[in-house]
Image: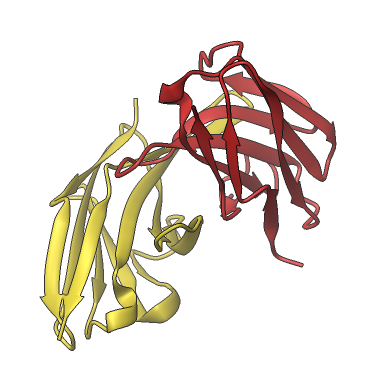
Length: 115
Length: 115
């Protein structure tokens, strides 16, 4: 079964510092990978997705992620953190089973941004 | 309209009550999903509807009963719930279930408390 592992349940950075949130996947076939963000008391918003078209994927709000097959990783980065980036971030993998598909989420990483 | 709406935002119910959660999208999506999210946990898939037919039921207890009256609407009927069912219930939709480049759009959720 396909799965994702997020290293670090909590990451704290200073405003203006680099943001790095880690995600490793386990898949025997090329995976479809996603990063979602969840602000308090809200639903999930898609940041970016990997669909094998390009290994470096650019998303919204200045985030990007690089797919590295050799490392089975899809880490999320942002060059300069902003206070408004404080939220919960989920990495997810899409699993297809016949005509059905489903998203399996990692355990999440809470990003804290300090002044 | 690129929005998934959910009503109500908050719901408090007793263990003997019957209530329903409603989800609506007008993006022409043909796949709709229910997720359950406990505090500080990732969303867990409950049900998937594809072209108004139930295609995935993740062994959810029968006290949760989904319904898809048409391609824009998804309901979740609740009956005889337990306090441990208290959670954020998220609805999502996507263009169609098994498309390789599918992404799911999430609603803001219904915060359910069972007393």
